[in-house]
Length: 221
Image 1 (cartoon, helix red, strand yellow):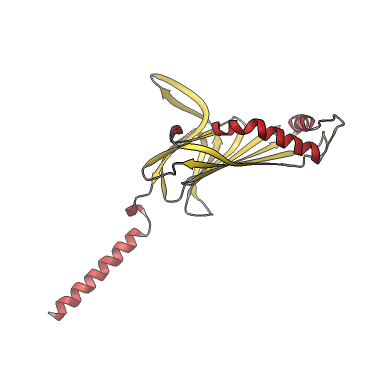
Image 2 (tube, rainbow, N blue to C red; image 1 turned 120 degrees about the vertical axis):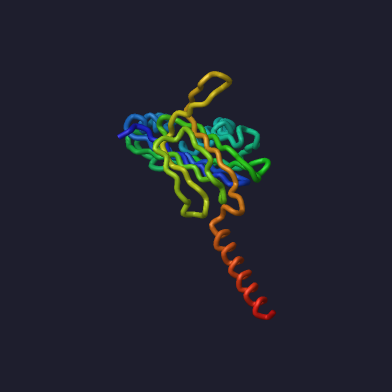
């Protein structure tokens, strides 16, 4: 059993982005986390201590959340709409485990995503065992980098495309130098009209109508 495991869920829309971070702490990591919550050092964590920790953590950490994701290499401005944090199984003796931390950051985008190609960059970490990225509806994946054992699927929520894998190392060039980083990068574009699934049946239907109309007109003559 790993002492700490992270999972990230990224949902990108044309006008917003939501990043959800789930942290699971076991063994010594759970004990150390609870000890950091135990402000009065009595080996018991209370709801008041948790509330105080959340307030202090979010006040100091919120500006850093803007460095966790980038859209179009930073050419799309992200701003934080809201941040929330929940701790589960945190109260009680500092030695109990596991401990769960769920942080959700909601971003706004300026300007909104338009037609054409776009990119999404998400910071990685060796302990992120599952990273899921949901792209906006009606988009086509061009490429992805920095996700290991990646799979792609249609979302159960809507018609958006989802990628899921483990956080890995991304390799890219800066000038003539090869550079590495723990991050995921996804390139995608808006689906063109003729690429929608309904277009072919629509065209066939229109063609059938034209054929029927032509036969009818010929018979009238």
